[in-house]
Image (tube, rainbow, N blue to C red; front, side, top):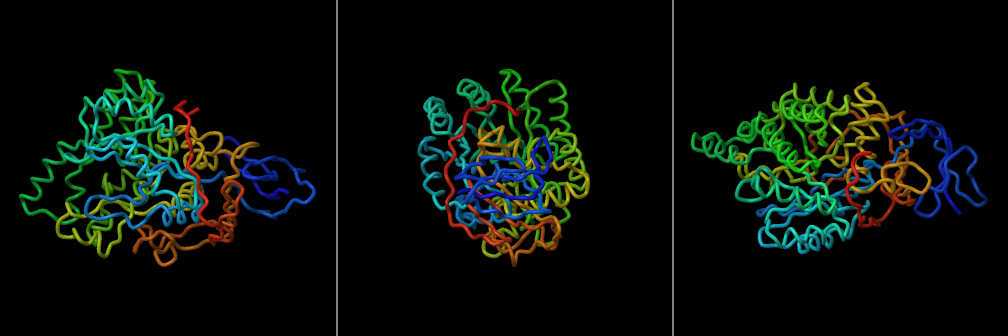
Length: 456
């Protein structure tokens, strides 16, 4: 006995067509106009758009930042994710100083056993040595096929250029993809010290000590280092026009550079730092409206490949407001995993900035291809996991912290309208969301990802 979604319009990264979908077990077993078999449950989805489940490849659930921990753990964060049309997340684990990669992986894996959606793990490397190099192969063997290096957070997470070179070299050998947080941490550290010395400690100085050119410089630098080895790089949370220009230049020269941006860098700007600015402290910080506009154009022209969230939640009261008088004490990050799908559909597709196919590519298919999930994830095709979003486009609701499932006391997109209503969200054939209510229980599985094969 299967389930048939009947009467919908299927949207993929390459095509739009009318067809029914038959689900049997955990996978899509048939697509067409006469797919029903005896005993099947038929669900009428006439007038609805059918998308592959969203994939958010940049989340930070249950993250300990030393003096506090994110308000969203894996259970609350993934429940919010699936409520908002995201069926797979890849969370960043961090190898802290003195840890092995295996220890960091096991810590992350054990925390993630209550997920509502499927999950993978990236590995952040902060303590590089010969043993770490050997362990990169061990990570590949357990399905962790992507790594992260921080070029910021001096004396904590930041690595130097020599480590960048060595990790890229080793990643090429083992078939991994290295992702980069691109800001010049050395200069930022100096600017922060100068600001504090001059008594400039309000939240807006978090942004002012992390100017746009320091993102551009770091992006250019890592692309140049990668060029020595002829290896791909993936830039996370791109926030500036200047950084985008560096990526466009590299891509036009044939270099294999992939770029991700996030909703906060498309919709929010640095004017928000003037009132309760601590809510919006994140790294990189919010930028200018001109940067918002440039990033939208970068998406439309396909110079930006993916849209993730960098979801990293801390409550305003009791966490972020702790540093309202000293920006150094504000935990960095903000929510987004629940609203990404709706925001990009509403303000990307319906405004004509993106086509429906581009929308699917950037929130699902390209992330799946880059991070070793495709074609199991990120596609509506026979044999793919039945991770399916059924969106009724005829409704409009308002984003509000009062109605969100994200475990945080504010929403940076408060009051923004969103078009579309999640009739159903399926995870591997399981009905997880029905009429915007989460009806499924935690059943997310760890995904053993395959090695990097490029974005095609």
